[in-house]
Length: 213
Image 1 (cartoon, rainbow, N blue to C red):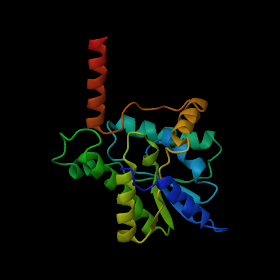
Image 2: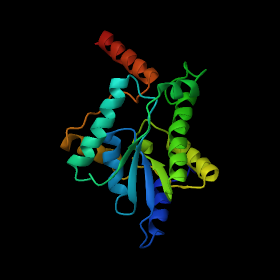
Image 3: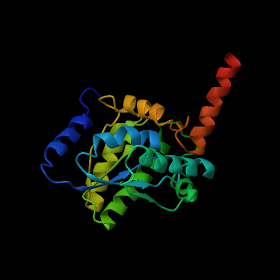
């Protein structure tokens, strides 16, 4: 892994090459905290539209809470001019995609399928609506695999004809900034990734800690 791509540097190269242009970027977002650490790295360079497409999130109350928190954060932080596109919420899209992978551990193959499901919808929407670039907030999380995320993005760029912005938003204090912004705006920070499997895993861990304590 020593020779793996530094995606933060790759993003720097893209940004430096934009010159005086201001392309349209579709940013797939999973929640307000992740967006709070990602947008500051992008808004100087792009006209951004946020895409909220997360059929993996369970239960529905959690899905709607995260979407509402995202909208509230954009307004509170003075970014009400950034449009948010929310696509229909259909959890069956997620369950169908990960069928047969229900017993996979966190960060395993099920997560890879979930990354692709959401990123492919972003690439498709970007292609259909004339965006120049697309990317996702997912790489800000220390629990997500930036290599898989960016490899998927490259594959989708070839498939849909919209450029994928390489990223590793957690670097250069990106994740730290998201923590600071969450505290500043009193953002709801969920304690599991989103799907029912990650929720059950977290509950299991919490129970184990309680029993050990």
